Image (cartoon, rainbow, N blue to C red; front, side, top):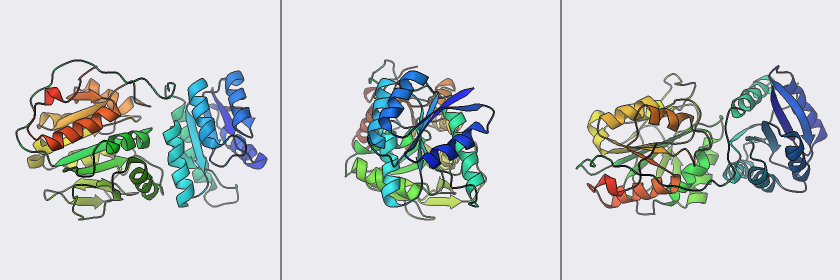
Amino acid sequence: MIRVLVVDHSPSVRELLAQILDADPRLQVVGRAPGGEQALAMCARLRPHVVTIDLQMSGMDCLEAIRRIMREYPTPIVVLGGSDSPDEVDAGFRAIEAGALVLVRRPPEPAHPDHATAAQALVRTVKSMAEVRVVRRWPARRGAHGASRPASPKPHRLVLLGASTGGPAVLRDILAELGQDFALSVVIVQHLPPGFSAGLAGWLAHASGFPVALAGHDQPLSPGCAWLAPDGYQLGVSRTLCAELSLAPPEHGMRPAVAHLFRSVPPELREQTVAALLTGMGKDGAQELKQLRDDGAITIVQDRASAAVYGMPGEAVRLDAARLVLEPTQIGRVLRAIANHPGGDLSLLGPREE
């Protein structure tokens, strides 16, 4: 049985969420907290497996409550938002930055036509998050040892980043290291609920200081900007370094999918590509990262210590898809070094582990 603590300032919303979650035979709401202080006390006493927390709270605000829970009682946290307004979307990504794992829609009242879909998404998310092992924020960074093969002699042109649960804060840390004169094209797939990709682009640009925009079909993927996959489309890369958007079927249940992006790189560009697979559940992108490595790309995987969820990176390590295994800041520095020193010795760029 998965024990859930519901945190919301509204009694009626707490009751609605409890009804939705308790209706699933695998879930049990063990506590209902009106604010952050009560949530901390209940985390200490009840030891829930998952905490749901509303963005709008009185008393201790949502961000401080998340920070304290992750510092004192590390628990997977699902943040609930009620709208896609810019302010609320920004607050949601700041909650992820503070330590929450995922942002989902708060289910509306039962009479609303979207109630059943939103309720199912919440239940599915809570059950998935219960399987995640979290650590106290922030984990200590650590290095490792090992050699890597020489880098391709061709100058690199393309950086691919794939992430899922826990990804926004990791992407922020990587992009913050690149610098305004970064000379490679950056393309990102981040698994998100529908309606949040534009908000993520804006938040990443503000939080990292590196330009981020949604990719459009046939748009040149120019350097100096990170191009993010929009909602509901598979994103690929053409031979001329333009974005290719399509309604190709979901992969690993996702559209956009990391697998589609990685696989789309034309063979002639693969030796000029750097691809990184970051925190996330499942296996999306791992097999395709291995193929990129076999075809001459520099491949990077986020390390276990810094990943909120080690599913995707762990699968890539198991497949021997990674030439480098690094924490997020190191990934950003390696990307900057590759851009600034084309053809340099890869063994000097960072550690290999696992």
